[in-house]
Structure formats: structure tokens, C-alpha cells
Image 1 (cartoon, helix red, strand yellow):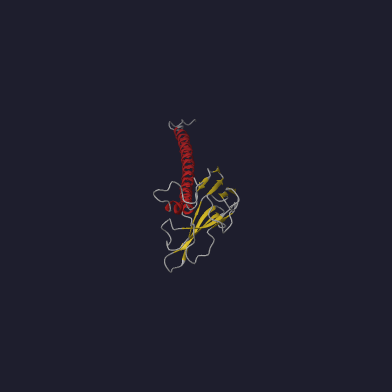
Image 2 (image 1 turned 60 degrees about the horizontal axis):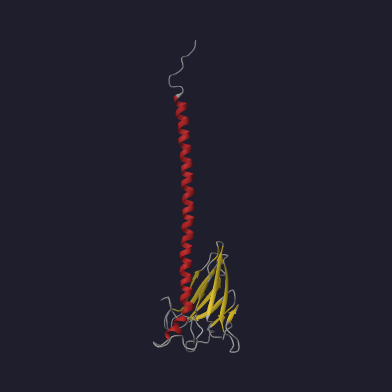
Length: 216
């Protein structure tokens, strides 16, 4: 005797196939969503790094333009020295972080901790208080740095670009800083050290900074 075929025999199989198709579509959509989220987070992280590096470059500009042209009393540290890979100089307080009664020692070079090109500053917390330090990265880890200095190092020599600047000389007229990272070489920063102090000496009738007629 032959059994009659159930009316809903194929329905369960069809529902199973439809469910599997829907699950596959959901999996594809979730994978696409997660991939897009990962890309967004990656871009957001890079954007955050970019903002931090822009802030650090702005701090570097402020410190260089505030570089001292004469030392604070009883301060025997070199005013300005550097080579093609790093530089160190004394600056006035420009960031509202340190006590303004002492010079801030600023360093630009590779961080031994992170491997990034970093800007460091060290100054007094307050009158009679201890020292404190700040640091900010100008590139991602593995970035590179090239520095050149423009100025006159002897009275019988014309101003020229140099790969180093010895302690004991006055601050250079210009500093060219070129940074690079995995994204390529960034546009160079050409900055005027001690600009803040030189301009403060210009009287209302002066057309050029005193004693520096060739400064831009």
C-alpha cells in the first residue's frame, strides 16, 4: 500500500532554504558594516594623530619665535645649538605651562621611547619649585627629520645655509625643518628664531629689525 504524500512535505525545505539565504544576506551586510566601521575608526585615528601633530608644529613655531637672544641671569646653558637631526635652544614661556621667570629648554629630535620625531620642553613649575617636562610627537613612529640653519657664523663670511649650529653663536636667522613619515615628506617649516624678541625692539619709526637689515 502506497502512503499519500503530505501536502506540506516541501514547505519545510523551502523555508529552510529561504532562512539560509536570509542569514547569508545578513552575514554579508554585517561583514560590510564591520569593514566600514574599521575603516572609519582607522581614519578617525589618523585624523586624531594629524590634529596632535598640527598642535605640536604650532607649539614648535611659538617656541622658536620666542627663542632667547640673551640668557636669563645666572643661566649658563647654551642659547641655541643643533645639527641636521636635532636641536636644542632656550625660549621664553609661550604656552602658559611653565613659570615665566626662567627660560624653557626646548628639544626637537627623535624620541627614544616612541621612535617618533618629538618636541620636548622643560621648565620650572613656579618660583622656587621643581622642573616639569612636556612632550608632543610631530610624526608617527619611524618618522624622519632634517634641519638646516641660515645665518652668519663669522664677520668675514656671508650668511648661508648650514647643517649644524654651534653653541655660542647667536640664534640663526632662519631654521628650515623638514618632517616625513609613512605618508611622505611634509611641506618644510621655515621659521624665524627669536622673532618675538627682535620685533619687540622695533620702535614706531623703525622699518627693519635693528642690527639685522637683511632679515626677511
